[in-house]
Each structure stands twice: as C-alpha cells, then as structure tokens.
Length: 244
Image (cartoon, rainbow, N blue to C red; front, side, top):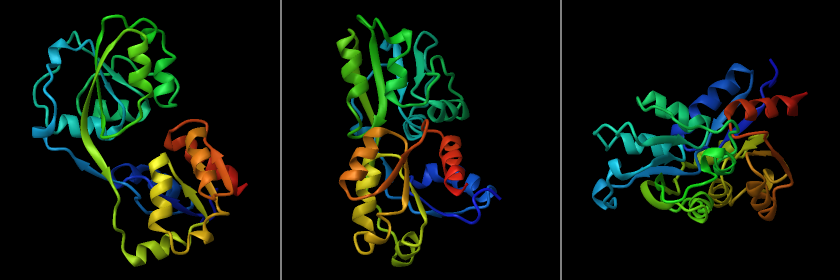
C-alpha cells in the first residue's frame, strides 16, 4: 500500500475530514482526525435582510457555506440568479443539496481561480451575494467591487476553537505528517498542541496555498509542502510522494 501505515494528522473541521481520512486509510495510511476548527451555525435571526430575486449572482465559498445556507433557506432560488461555486468541493455540496452550479472555475485554487474566469471581468452594476463564514477573506469581495459589482455578505456560520480531549491531543503528537488547509487552522493547531508542539515542527506539513505556507513558517514549522490544488486527491497524491 502506497502510504505504508503513515500516520497523518488531518486538521480539517469534522464535517470536511471524513473523505480524506477514508482515502488515506484506503491507501494504507493511518489518519488521526484532529479538528482544529469547530463550525457553529449562526442563527437566522442574526442574518441581514436580503432578497434572493434581486441578486444577479450568489457565490458559495465552501461546503459549510452551502450546507448552513440550505439548512435554513427553504424557498426556491429564482432561475435568473446565477449560482456560483469557488471550487470543486463547494460545487459537489451544491449538487448534493439540489442546487444547480452555473459557474465553477476549472482550477480549485480558491477565490483566485474564480476571479480568473472571464465571467467576472466586467461586473458593472451586478448585485452579488457571497455566502460564507464569519470573518472570511476579503479578496473576492474587494476585487468584485473594484470591477463594478455591488457585493453583500451573508455569513451563515462561524469558526470556534475546539476543546479536544487529552487523549486525542496525545494521539495528535504521534503523527508523522500534518495536513492543514487554512491559516486559522495552522494557528489553532499551535494553540491546541502548545505542550509538545516541538515534536511536530520538523514533520512534513501539507498546505493548500502559499499564503498558509508563509504563516506556518512564521510559527516554526520546517518542512512545508504546497499541494497542486485544494482537493483531497491532490493532498493524497502529495502524501504518496512523501512515502516514495
């Protein structure tokens, strides 16, 4: 088996970790699920008012954005509203929840991939609703505003710091490789494993962007590898390369 019982610390939120953990196991590795971010829904009463029919585009930035939006919104989205995914993961979630995907970038590299598409070159006068978690990145909205769009956020969930058991923390420190998929995730990992963190700093860490790599380096991690894209398949491919 290509992973040869490699112990991989998967730090994704619980809702997103299952698929990668199963892929690692199927390839002969051992996954240690250690969520460093807990996803908590934001009560609809705290949502700002918005009218679906007045939007030209609704952009979903993550699987969580899709799930927490659909769990609350029961009305059909008008056909004239374009439904947009920032990548393969959110697109898959949209389809799973019965939503169409009108626009999806070819490259799963986050907001940057979406902004490279010709559909977003001229946004003059378009109303855009971005569905996201509280306190997400501003790149997408700022760029669309620069291109002429009127952008509003609908924040449907927030990220909090989990409180894993002592046993789970001890298991995490036995990992031979780490997967981290967000800046906040890297920061939370260092907080949760503050005692004993030195044992992980020289272990390979797989991240999905140069931005995350810079933060990980600043926190003391020594061997940081950026995957070719944000997909689970790209992460698994890089893990297998480590074992060759």
